[in-house]
Length: 332
Image (cartoon, rainbow, N blue to C red; front, side):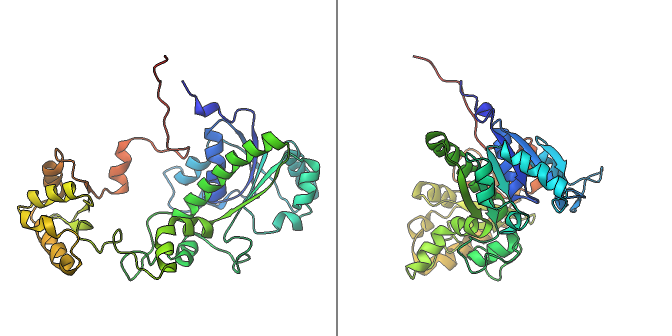
């Protein structure tokens, strides 16, 4: 049986990063068996004490991202601590650099020095924006990246603060994917090098379908709420259901449940989408969320409850390793 948790056994990673993207990248690598040394500034990663805090005064997200790492505090403005960092990097396979662009170079550790000391090193830089972008030197957080990528305006307007750290999380995942590809390339050539990604690049990647349509002069509508068969509807108790009945057989089941089979042939008729949405909205307001879920449970109609994080957490513990599982297979 495959054991992916040991895939990177023997790979050493030095992480100089705070908050989410860099620490997430390193957490994914640790979940695959790498040894990760996390370098924190004096006082620690700011995520440690960023609200909300649990009953111990700690941030649960910090624990989730960093529990499998060896954490060390270094003041990189002190020559002795900088020498310690240089020694750690010299024997590492991967350096995750979440500092501002050029920060390590200004400390006397530019890429050419690091790669001269350790030619097999993979330097993985996660910035706010791509190094070729006009905003490459600006400070950016997740909300800024989502705003600049068009993600915030991809749904209903006016935009609102999203509940998901999409740019943070995906940039960390992209960086981890790049490390895996980089290790394969390095093992073939014996040479390391620099790899870059950014929160803005990650957000644009997430929004690629809408951006591709925009470049072609088209507007996204099919999957952004313009179709009545792909929307959120409020229930009698103020909760919501997600209806994603894009396929005709799913749409037929939804229309049958609300006793409106006459709507089935109108699914993609652009001229009646407002009427269809209003009809479904009125129907879903007649029952509570629990009642609707009992109705749809046996039907397989792509209708789901919109769960709160507390409800979704009941599915089991969460981790930040890759969301994959390995299964035993029959051996021939």
